[in-house]
Amino acid sequence: AQTVTQSQPEMSVQEAETVTLSCTYDTSESDYYLFWYKQPPSRQMILVIRQEAYKQQNATENRFSVNFQKAAKSFSLKISDSQLGDAAMYFCAYRAPQGGSEKLVFGKGTKLTVNP
Amino acid sequence: KAGVTQTPRYLIKTRGQQVTLSCSPISGHRSVSWYQQTPGQGLQFLFEYFSETQRNKGNFPGRFSGRQFSNSRSEMNVSTLELGDSALYLCASSPWAEGNTIYFGEGSWLTVV
View 1 (cartoon, rainbow over the protein chains, first blue to last red):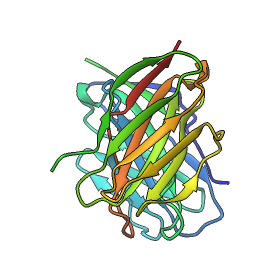
View 2: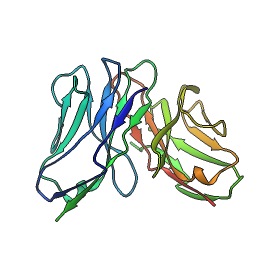
View 3: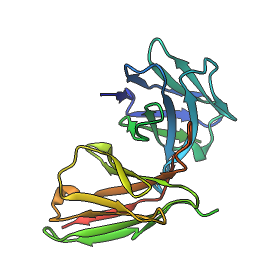
């Protein structure tokens, strides 16, 4: 079974600085999808960024970028120029290739605090 | 375009009762999945539906059930509630297409007393 591990339960960063959240996963598949979701106090899960495993290029979305290391099964999220609104729980998630299920396997999450 | 809508947002039930939660997916989305979120277990997959058929089920007891209607709306039911069922129940929808993004609702907070 696939597993996702987030080794940092909590992280903090100063406003305007950069922070990296770690995620590792375990799978025997060669094709899959990886996601970072943000969950603010409102509790709605918001997609931050996604990565297709067959793409070697790291995904970027404005201030958010990933470092995808397929061989190492690592998928870290870098947040640049951190803003107060970035404070939230961040979840790394894995999804198997299409055709069977859209089930997401989540890590335990990292609580990010942004200090002014 | 309206997002994923879940009702009710908050509810309190007594042990032994049963509860039904509702989810309306984004218009055009035919796939709906449910997750349970608790402080101890994190986010756990409950089940997913596509075109009224359950495609996958998580490791939960039979007290947890769900269904999907022809308009893609979904309901989940928990019978004989236990204190441990207190959780945030999240519904998600997607168009079920290769590489699609899964969108979540705001969740239903269930407290069992």
